[in-house]
Every structure is written in C-alpha cells, then in structure tokens.
Amino acid sequence: MREIGHFINGKPVAGTSGRTADVYNPATGEVQAKVALASPAELQAAVDAAKAAQPKWAATNPQRRARVFMKFVELLNQNMEELAVLISREHGKTVEDSKGDVIRGLEVCEFVIGIPHLSKGEFTEGAGPGIDMYSIRQPLGIGAGITPFNFPGMIPMWMFAPAIACGNAFILKPSERDPSLPIRLAELMMEAGLPAGILNVVNGDKGAVDAILAHPDIAAVSFVGSTPIARYVYGAAAANGKRAQCFGGAKNHMVIMPDADLDQAANALMGAGYGSAGERCMAISVAVPVGEETANRLVEKLTPMIESLRIGPYTDEKADMGPLVTKEAKARVLGLIDKGVEEGAKLVVDGRGFKLQGYEDGYFVGGCLFDNVTPDMEIYKTEIFGPVLSVVRAKNYEEALDLPMKHEYGNGVAIYTRDGDAARDFASRINIGMVGVNVPIPVPLAYHSFGGWKSSAFGDLNQYGSDSIKFWTHTKTITSRWPSGIKDGAEFSMPTMK
Ligand code: NAD
Image (cartoon, rainbow, N blue to C red):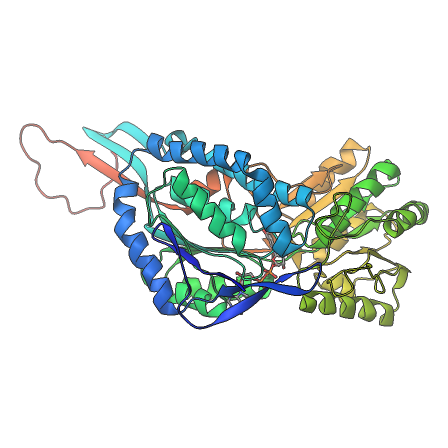
C-alpha cells in the first residue's frame, strides 16, 4: 500500500506518528493509499525547518523571490496533465475540471510575480519639520494554511503563493482526503529554486490542526473548509494571538428574472450546479426564478438536461461529473435528499438510485432537482455539497432578493437578466461577497480577491489579490528625523505634525 508522508525541510519524509487515514479512489471505493497523520512532534520538525530558513528568505530581494514563481508557473504548465490526474485520482472530479483547479492556483502564482511592486511601501517626505515618515511591509515569519478537499491545487496556492512571495515560511496542512497533489506542488517549488524549509507540507487531521493553532511560532493561519470548523479555527487562532482568515461554507443562489435568456440561464445552472458533482463552494445550489411562468419554463428546460448528465469516473473523458469524495459524503447527501422529500419538496429528478456498471462501489449520486423548496426546509438551509439543485419560486424581484439576503451564508450569488437597472440594484443591495451578473460562478481573478460575507467568512482580509499581501505582512511605520544644529529639549505633550 502506497504511503503518503509529509514534506519537511525540502524533502519528502515518512510519517512517524503511527496514525494514518485511508485515501480512496471515489470511483471504485477502493483504498489506494494511506496518508500519515502528523503528531505535534512532526509539526515541530516543520516549524524548526521554517524558522531556520525564513530570515534568509525574507532578506532575499523581492525580484529573486518573484523568479522562483516564474519558474514554478512554467513547471505547472509543463506538468499540467500529470498534476490534474493526481487530483482526479483522489478527488474523483474529471481531469478537465482538475486542470481548472491547478490553473486557478497558477494564476495566483502569476499574480505574486509582481511582488516587488506589490510589497512596496509608502513614503511621505517632510511630514513635519525635518521629518520623513514611511511605511514598510515586513513578513510575519511563519504562516500556516489549512485547506479543504475540494480544490487540492487551487486553495493551497491561494495561500502559499502570497505568503511565500512576501518573505514568509509556510506550513500547509492539506485535506487528508486528497493529499498527493500538495506534496507534488512542494516538490515543484523546490525544483523552481525555493530554499528548503520555506514550504513544508504536514499531513494530518484535527490533531495537526490543533497543534498549528497552539504553536507559538506560527503567526498567522489561513483556513478554508466548512463553516463549523472555520468558526472553530478562527476562535482558537484569535485566542492564541494569531492573525486569522477563515472561509466557510455556502449556499449560492441564482435569481432568474422573467426577461432573462432562459437557455443561457439553464446552461449556466447545469455547469454551476452539477460541475464537480456540486462539490464547490461557489456552486449554485438554489435557483430562484421570478414569476410562475419563468419557473415552469426553467424546470421544464432543466429536467431533460439533468436526466441526461453523463456521470463517470475521471478516466471517462466525456463525463460531465464524477462521484462524491467519500462514502460518508454520499450517505450525507442521500440523507438530505430523503429529508427534502419528507419535508414536501417536489423531487422532479431523482438521482438517488444512480448506478454505474463496473463502478457499483463508487460514491456516485445522480443529478437531482427539487422544485417548490421553501426557506424553512432543511435542504434550503443546509449546504448539501452534492449534485442537488433546489428551485425556490419567488413572486417578484423583491421576494427573490430577500432570499439570499436572509440566508445564513454569503459566499456567491448571481442574477440572470437583460435589465441593467435590476442588475445594478441587485449588485448594490445584496449582502454577499461575490456577485455575478449573467455569470453563474463569479470567482474573482487573481488580481482581485476572493471572500464571502456572513457565515461564509470570519476575519477581514480576503484570499489573494492585494488583500493577501496585507494579510501575510505586518505594517511598520517609521517616523524619522535627523536633527541638525541645537538639539531640542524634551516634549511632554502629544506629538503632532505642526
Ligand atoms: P472540512 O471543514 O471538513 O475540512 C477542512 C480542513 O479542516 C481539512 O484540512 C480538515 O482536515 C480540517 N478539519 C476537519 N475537521 C476538523 C476539526 N474537527 N478540527 C480541526 N480541523 C478539522 O471541509 P471539507 O469537507 O474538506 O471541504 C468542504 C467545505 O469547504 C464546504 O463547506 C465548502 O463550502 C467549503 N469551502 C469553502 C471555500 C471558500 O472559499 N469559502 C472554498 C472551498 C471549500
């Protein structure tokens, strides 16, 4: 059985804790590897390596730090196919979708190639008589990232690229469900010229996370995962005096106005609802058609499209989506679908019985469509994280707007309309972090930044973009005067720039 260990001080190392977790092939249900679960002593080895390497890296001029990312981007492009397969094998999503996972992380690496410019400070000459004032951004020291299973390429790169470009050392604790790609990324960073100890990968579960949260030498923690764990990590990190940004779950709505192009909206819902089997934090899981006629027509269009979804293992190049990640995820999703039926929602397309010949033990669930869902139902309140789309019918625009506004989560939202005034009003009033206008999955590009509102995010600064440079650095402001002539006496009142 293949064993996946850690990556510490520039090389792969075997786990020594004696604890492991199974890594499955979600298409077949077979255990394909065991991943080591780190003990606090193994985390300490990563911290020791990081601590030893970081001062020299921070003192390396930013152009040289940028060059590591130039080379890394080249290596990612060269190895794209291999990297995508590495993801698909453990996650289950299609290879094309896994390439998207790598590319969206690669784009953040491209962004941080601008680090010499991005990390420049501010300077005011003559802030007072003979006084100059300047602000510089200095790395925090050691940062840590804790990432979810659904984007094992993109999300680690969201974090380690800006953290390392800013001059920090980094400890990544990836998801134990699909740990192979993060280790491979660390190897490629070494090949790109990163000094040993600057990027370490420590595999593990709650034990490793708690060790990170308690470690006095780790200055900042970036987390992406489910909301209960995001809330927990944020609280524990803050209680231990660490800087934290913690991103959680979602329930993303798409409002479809009566004037929208319904073919476009239906196609967008298919990709955004069922791509990656719905296991995306920016998946659309609630469609809100405005008006009975819009709703009837939309459901009519969606039904045959969902029924003809091609579902298969990642080796099927034509598959639209793959299986769910684990047996537990499948059982949870099926349980929620049963609950929706019990609660009285109309299950228009029922994917619960889906079976694929030759893959009977895989974690597949067929595409499902619920109609007549209401806000009091469990399937509306909970993030299902599976191939299940709920239709909530709204009488008018205000009622449609009210639904995502009142929902616990605030990650992404979209509106489909031809009316610029409605779109503008929607974008302005909605209390959600990322808004799409005729765009179903409005994930911002690397030079903007990613983050939700409400229970989808705790902390303030977003992932990537200029926010990330702020998150991974301290601001230091220097007020300097070089006196000439007679020295002044002491000043006892609050100094102001007269
Ligand atoms: P998860 O919360 O189960 O796991 C995330 C990380 O936390 C993993 O590294 C895991 O090992 C660790 N962890 C799990 N339980 C823990 C515990 N009790 N104590 C400490 N650490 C623990 O999430 P997941 O199932 O891997 O990912 C899916 C979730 O992530 C969904 O809710 C999805 O919406 C969310 N997500 C959010 C974003 C975003 O940017 N907002 C992006 C991707 C995924």
